[in-house]
Length: 367
Image 1 (cartoon, rainbow, N blue to C red):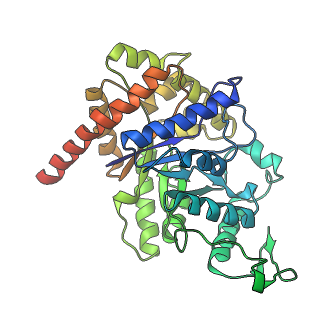
Image 2: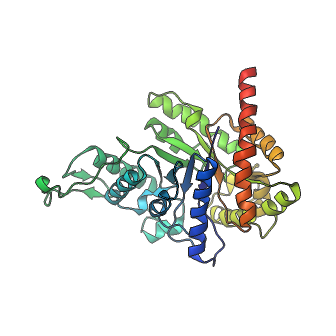
Image 3: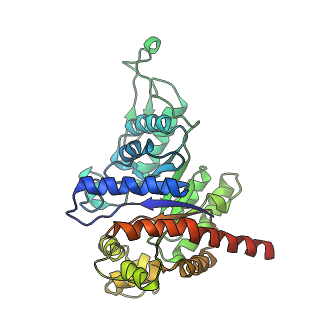
């Protein structure tokens, strides 16, 4: 199992923006030094807590301060962008990264963003599919493109001057395109099946109960079969909220108490999702009222915390529920205590993951 990270991020409203950006940049730099293989950054426009408004710009800022880690968009919310602009900007960033870029895409889940761009009452899944189809068509074709769709029409028929390159949109560094991943944020996700059929791979969100994460694997298998490829657990990424400390008292306090970053994160996220009619994501009993969803309950269900030994045991138990997957994406949180946050990453890399992989190898050999 490989180790990466995924951060939305969610910071306390009112924190100085420049500080949050430096903190999220440092997350990537430290992850790179610790051997994390991948790191994903989210983006939203209309949220004071989720401070990264362009994952592409943020990755461009971070690239030269990292050496090995692959950086990905988590995600570009395609209905909020013109496909031609995304095609051009992703191609540029892919060349800057020289192969260290992963293209994460989604329809976008923040409804205030959808309202801002006039998409609230539109079929955003339809827009998402049309947008990525246009992007891929631009990368595989030449000017004048002449792409017609319901939401965007793309053509440079009148102003292409081929002999000097005018009208040309660059192709990515990784051909035919960078690896494409999609976030899976719903149980039994049809999107996972459709993405897998097109050769793309899923990231299961860190705010899903383990029983819901488990439902993504058969949908992935179904999609891979439709696309004529073998489903490989190595290509399945699963995000998880984890905090590791030297002692249980510190771990419990930082990971569970009000005022801590994990409680703050899930209070913000659960409020949004419940308001948007998605309280089911947090319920063991689907008949329970929405009022049963509380930040304390969500933290208890979704956050793995403790000493390295306890976290190892909990991660192996989590894997027993979900089934095998290839990359564990350590979820990023606000650094209320910088020292504890960094030490948790160090313990994940140096103690937890080696023990987890050793246990997996023993299980495999015994099977």
